Image (cartoon, rainbow, N blue to C red):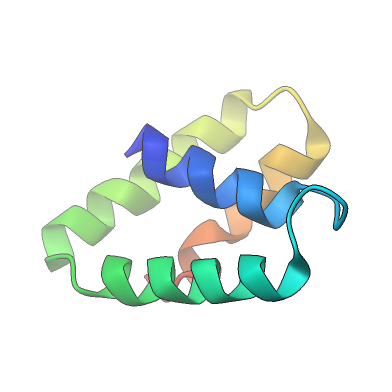
Length: 75
């Protein structure tokens, strides 16, 4: 779970000079589609994981990302 969330955070939070915005959007849409294929139980675990991680996230941007992740990914 952590690897998926960290990869999505990298794509979402990286500046345009690091990750092309069109490529980032395409990748995040692909991730959202694939995460949508998870079982309801796995989705619930992922949501719980992101909520718990948000509570201890050191940076505000990452904390905000984690809090929005479930909705953004359609979970």
